[in-house]
Length: 239
Image (cartoon, rainbow, N blue to C red; front, side, top):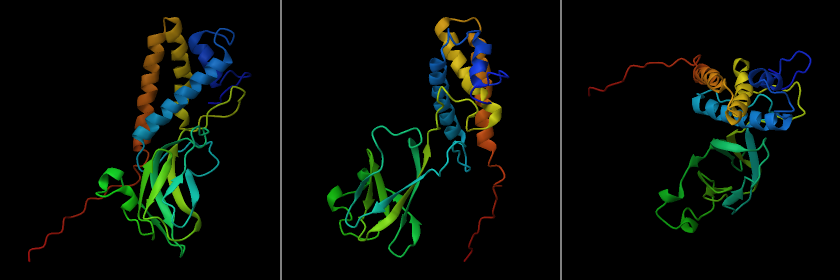
């Protein structure tokens, strides 16, 4: 479903008018946009909660959900997040961290929490080498041990990110998740308005939202079913 379609009245913005009976003077476009984006974030959270082995990413994104940074010899900590990330760089969850060594071999790093170390952090794996572990603290990632070499784009971080939000001036842009559930955004924004105004159909809108929410989560929970689980015979040794 398009964000806005004033000609055929098939957009999310027009669907809000259908459910609320309010025009854009009573329910302004800026408020509709704000509420649609909030429900977009909520929808992404539902998808992440239900998603299986086939990880979702907003179809409107133009790059991979992967960030790289240069490795600096002797440096343990790297700031990888900003205080106010843009919607395209808002990391919600880190999936994996990979490293490229000085011979261009790539491998996965293992997560480590500072509470798992029995020594002072400054003394834990204090000899520089090839990093094997990582720990996120605040806006930074720490490598253990620190690398003993420099490497451009030597550290890769794969993550789940928030969706690219709509601008109030958008028209043909569509939500970047499965199309049968796009109406969650217009229903959600309609529910916000109906609840604030005490509309008679508030509960009806909520019920429609719950139906679509369940369908959405079932869809993303089951879409990786082509990966068939295999039962294998347990090997036992009788020696």
